[in-house]
Length: 388
Image (cartoon, rainbow, N blue to C red):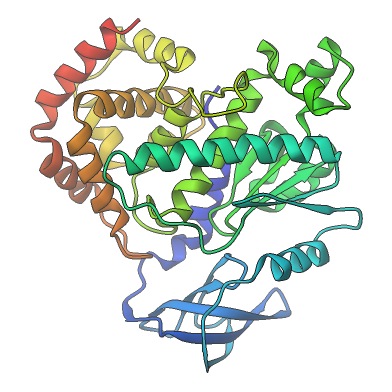
């Protein structure tokens, strides 16, 4: 089953109309205020304008971390205050979240996360522990590889719904009909992860109906039938960490195989240890099996197609195979070309918001860092074909 990609697809549809923007100005240092008219409503926002288009449209980072791509015809008013831009404090963010969500939600705060939940306190604590261990492992992993990882501007927001039904109702605004088949997602626009309490899942509850304590929750979610769902949570949390630590930048021309390949590389959960995280970089058996099964019918130039376009990753018919290849390529580059891969990621992280290249540019960027694509593909396929 392919990793969730509907949220990214939806986000790119939202901002597709901005691809032709002529970007003429970068944002200022002060706090910006804008009024947006959409669907007959006026929305007042405070934040930092990251850039201004030639026609007057703007990209604003709001104080709660959300990105607003506002076209010129939607921008009703704009002003700048002398006060410097500041993200919401944890208290302000919590107050804003509780006002936005239905009654009954509570807050659970950790060192890097603000978890807004209406399920049990024990489940919120389990999520907080899982995410903090992933965060620490990710920070350590990239720091050791020469990346200048920075702390998020504010707490990373996670919304945890008590059941699948209420989660789907909320998620439909981002995912549409796909909400019913995805257990968690990260939104590029809102910068939040949304999910539901997995211990209420029928498959998991049937195996073990007791889910009251932290120990019982961990026991339930360590079972084999829970592994794909927990992997999805870790996958989406990895996206959130990457986009808030300087590893990647939202609304930039980062190939989808890169962002998804990284998330799959990190997604193997480690629920047996309360310290550390041993899941990073483990062989993903389902992805490897899919990749190796496809080798017999692999067409010439397959790698170039993956590198130059996101189409295979977004198409439901080809997504499972494309995600498997994205993981395989990431695994190969991490193991065989780590310094070149790190340099490639650093180049991508420097790209500007809403500036889109084409397939030829993507191929040229890849070849600049890794050399001849056909030669690399031959070694890549041979290496991954032998992996066990």
